[in-house]
Image 1 (cartoon, rainbow, N blue to C red):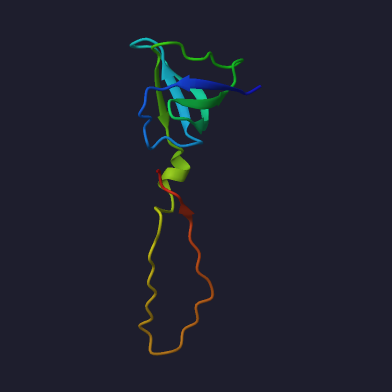
Image 2: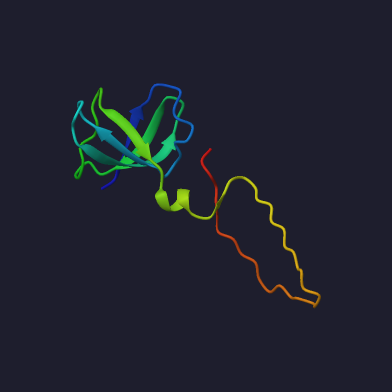
Length: 109
């Protein structure tokens, strides 16, 4: 059963962190990397993460916490806040355009 945990983070929080990113942590200086869960909200000095306490233990004080972006969203399609497209027809005959489509994902903020 998923639970929400609030992780205190010293400001400023990394500006590329966004809801939906995966959170990991490492205990000690050479412990294994542990997948905690998914960011559900971001505050000024904390992040809220959905995780399953029956599967993974919560991080403790001085554990190293980091995040990873969703590779599918962050590596496909047009990214950004706007796009400019120009169609040119070099034919001397009439040409009809039946369809135009795009796969667009908002880039990190």
